[in-house]
Length: 284
Image (tube, rainbow, N blue to C red):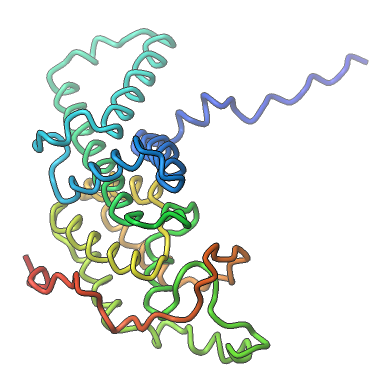
């Protein structure tokens, strides 16, 4: 009997990368380089993060000071890699050069630029002055991070334990029910979901990121970049809102990862920092 041929692999690294959106890859590469350098106080990383932070709220390419920043260069490199890979497989279709295809590519690239720029500049704002903890952390979706903030928690480790001063497990679960969440934080989260355009969305996300920074609660910026890309397509916007809402209502187990600075205790979520952006509370 002939030997059974080995099963094909579950896709190569190249195939897996191709399945990821360009914004997700660009944000992962950019923050991956900068975050560790910033935490180690490496001069070039500190300078790059400072430049990115100043670009928060500005258009990726309209703002001249954004030209030459690392995240946009990385996105351009990834586009070229994908274009080369696609052309090498089947050649370039004549339809690629049509005016309709050109306009479609331009719109897609504009959305990708926006998604990467908003995500990376928000991370730079989030990471500001925090050397001991990464503020980009995989698995911390927007809904999850906001839920933790709304329950007055800080960092990623619960402030109490099920057998110690934090009360019993049942008491902790009761305290963390969504109806016990801070109404102040919940309203801000609702305003993010109700944003009508990208500029308003970016502004309201920036307000939330400042609150998360005060509480040292991280965010998954690669996931956020993906969601920002989809959000710009009106046909997919409800999908993003649904994901945010589901993640906010989902119950999460306690993280095993301890805070490196030993800071504990809960943050009162109804005490909003100085950067409250009251003027932005108008429905603009």
